[in-house]
Image 1 (cartoon, one colour):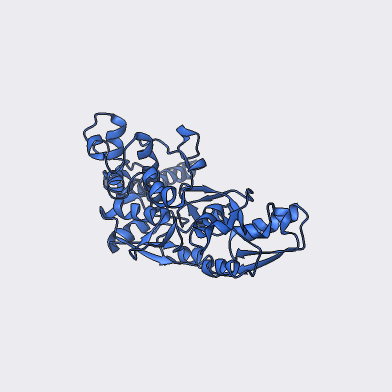
Image 2: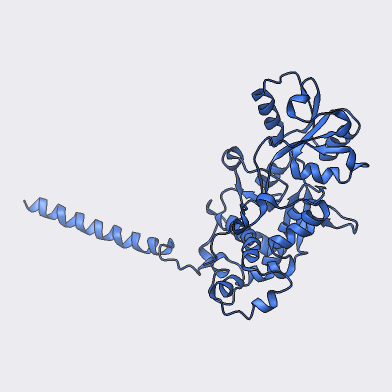
Amino acid sequence: MREETLFMTQWRFLLVAAMLLVTPLTACGGGNNTAGDTTAQTSTSGGTSRLDTVKARGTVICGINGEVPGFSFVDEQGQYSGLDVDMCRAVAAALFDDPTKVEFRKLTADQRFTAVQSGEVDILNRNTTWTISRDTSVGMDFAPTTFYDGQGIMVTKASGITKLEDLKGKSVCVLSGTTTEQNLADQMRKRGIEDYTPIASDDVDQLYAAYQEGRCEGVTSDRSQLVARRSVLPKPEDHVVLDVVLSKEPLGPVVADGDSQWSDTIKWITYATIEAEELGINSQNIGEFEKSEDPNVKRFLGSEGTLGEDMGLNNDFATRVIKHVGNYEEIYDRNIGKPLGLERGPNQLWTNGGLLYSPPFR
C-alpha cells in the first residue's frame, strides 16, 4: 500500500513536469495569434512565404505567354501589354506602389508549370486553364478566374467548314501540352470522328504559321486567342471562328501550392480589381471615393481597418492597384474590349448577369 502511494506521488510529479514543459511550447506555437500578427503568416510548408522573398527582391517575376494580343504581347511601343500583363502589374502596384516593378518571363506551354514549381517565376499569368489535375497532382494553386473562355476552332471562309463534323478527314492545328489537345480528341471521339489528323506545335507562333501556310484546315485554341490572332493575320476577314464551343476554359493567375500567404496575396489583389468595379471606383474617380464615409469603401481603400496589414501588405494595397492599373472594367476594355471588339459576355460582374464575383472585403 505504501509502495502504491509512493508510485502515485511520483506519477503526479512527472505529469505536472510534463505539463509545465508543454505549456510554453504551446504558447509559442501561435495558438493565440491576432489577425494583425503578420510575422506568424508563413507558407504551409513551414518555410518563409514567397511574399517575403518578393518584397525583399523588390520585383515580381511573372510568367506570361507573350504572343497573344489582348492577353500578353509586345505592343507598338515595345512594351508588354494585355490583360494577363496588367494583372501582373497589379501585384507590383499593390506590393511596391509601382506597377513597373515586374519582370516578365516568356514561357511555352511545356515550360510553364515547371517554372512555377522550381520558383523561376513568382506567378504565372499565361492564359492557363484551371483543371482538377493541375490544381492537385501538378501542384498548382489557382487564383480567381480573370477570364471565362471556351475552346473554339478557326477556319478559312473558303474552306466551307461550318461545324465540327465538317473536319472529318481533315487536319487541325493544336498546341501541344495544353487542355485544347485533349478537348479536341474528346469532342471528336464523342461525335465518332476518328479520321482527322491533329497537327501539334509546341509554340504559339508556329501553330498559327502552320495554319496560315495551309498545313491544316483548322486551328483550335481558346476562342479569345483565336479572335486575337485573327486580328493580326494578313486578311482577317478571310477567316472565321466557328459558332461552336468545345469546353469550359476558366483562365487566371497561378502560383505554387503550399504557400497560403502568397496565394492569399494574389487572390485578394485580383479580387480588388473586381470589387472596385462593383463599387464604381476606377482610376479616374478614386480621388473622390477617398473622401467617402461609406464603411465598405473605407475598408476597401484601406483608410479604415487592417485588412491589408492582416495579409502582410499595406492597408492601401487596393488603392494602389486601382490608381496605377485600374479596375477590371478598365483592364478589360483597354486590352480586349476596344482593340479586339470582344464583348464581355460571362466576364461581366454578377450584378450584370456575368460570373465575376468578389467575396466581401471585411
